[in-house]
Length: 422
Image (cartoon, rainbow, N blue to C red; front, side):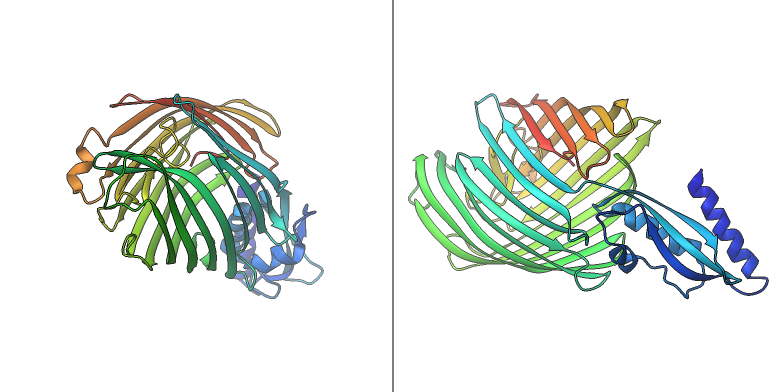
């Protein structure tokens, strides 16, 4: 109601100005912010002193501010200044706590256990920069760090730098059985970030990495080496369209994230290839306390007949309860859909329950599109979960999901994590 009042107030001022002098912005003030710098908020805002008062620009600023990690909610007020025909625009800020630990824990009925823990600051230096690091245990030890500064140079341009050293036990699927390899990926990535407006974002950059495979146990093949180390160069383009309306933990609207990659290799054993996938997400409010959420992933890669195919079937990525990296493919179709309902909702705390269905299918390496209809590749996992949400801490959503497979060779398992699954 307050939002509508301010909108019509600004509309009235603009309409009045059309009959005489146009209303002018005398100053833009910010209140309620403690950790986020006022200069930063003004930097990313479109409304500037000296401009004609425009309700559309003001609302666009509010929508953009709400999307920032450091801000949980924002509103505006307009007051007449000391100079006739000039008005002060005041942005009110409700801040998030942004120094956030995170954890993801994965289990299955095969007694698999893996976890990732870390710490991230989403408002470093009060400029909404992200600074983070993680440690992962998945049979072997891994670690990494990242810094992301989307508004480093202006309200449109920034940079991101990521380093990781990941070591996991990877199944490699051969014609005569499955082999397990110790897989290490050490990489450094630099991305240029461009945000033409608050709904659209581009990321373009390169990733230099080394892949190291060492045979552990299982089946063998004369065509598959037991030791392999390859230097690679990856070119990456990401386009994110975010048309979602955010109201605390409730979402409504559509989002699309396109990820295109081209990898150049120094080995014929792991030749160059391309990979592309798009995540389409749709959210809808259901009454006052319900939220229906769905994500569809469509992905294809070079259809190389290789045991090291890029699309994985994994607890943490796409199918809750399926296990830790149980299969690979050169194409993927995955649908996650769930209904979230707020059971308890207080000023700062929300207890949310959810029911979900995760389903997907994969194209076998070197196979054809008919593989998507093969029941050996199809996996459907319904399940239930709970969410513990803190409304004043960014992404402070602790989730527990239990998925139980109903297709061929199904498993079941529990997935813990921070943040919604999608």
